[in-house]
Length: 323
Image 1 (cartoon, helix red, strand yellow):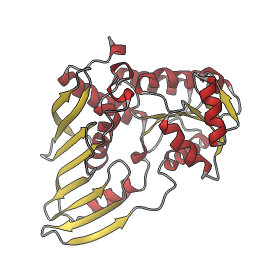
Image 2 (cartoon, rainbow, N blue to C red; image 1 turned 90 degrees about the vertical axis):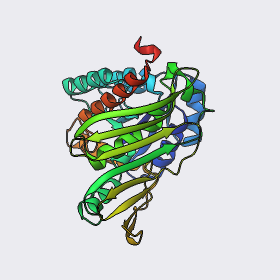
Image 3 (spheres, rainbow, N blue to C red; image 1 turned 180 degrees about the vertical axis):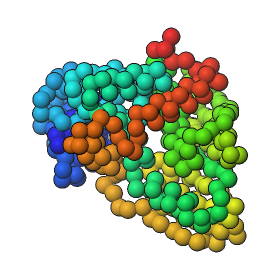
Image 4 (cartoon, rainbow, N blue to C red; image 1 turned 135 degrees about the vertical axis):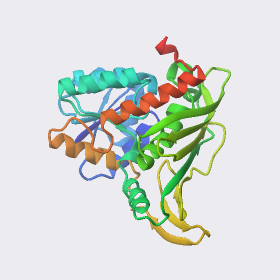
């Protein structure tokens, strides 16, 4: 399949590297609002076409799938452009600014019969099933609590702290903690509590989030942009616990008993980068004539945005574009 990338930032570079290593994908076209930037990206990454506008990329009849790698604040309009241009799209997380935008994309996708999915890679990786199989095996007894953290020292990146670009920890790294909890504990959530530290520009810098489940389970999540965390996810059960190394791109899954003795260790399968799984699922679903992902259906993206809307409401965080 001929792939197009909309946007030429850091994620686009990683995607290009992945696509070059995939036998079933062709690095075909890239678009930037700067023609010079698009040309430079195309030359460095082996793309055939370089466009100086997103509209030109969408209009190219050869493009079979577009990856949207623009800032959060542009996701809605860029997905809408793809849908109206009849181009299937994978959109970088977080899916949109808010649930209302996500619901509109879901509606447009279904009305036009065009495949659209959120490209949150952990939803597509084999590690997701490995973790759930280990939980379901009963090796740690009945799961009672989950903790997960994801923080990087990224406050030096302009977009991270820019309200106009929907900056802050939540949409950039917090989305991984929330998805980790939802993938492994589900959505039967009774209440959401949180504590936050805001920046002087009005976006969230560090937060602690507690999800209380109807059956008494809890998920405690922490995220931030000021420091590097260990990125672990831990599921605690009545007979032991499971440690997931790096919830952002799981490397291994290990079960321990209640005396900290290792019971089982599984390294995740070797991968190109991890981005290949979402692309391969998209290609398969498009070939089947489907308009949604199995691993990340649009209803799930809407739900995640609803959770993040609720958290931002607690914090009084409204992005300029929403005003």
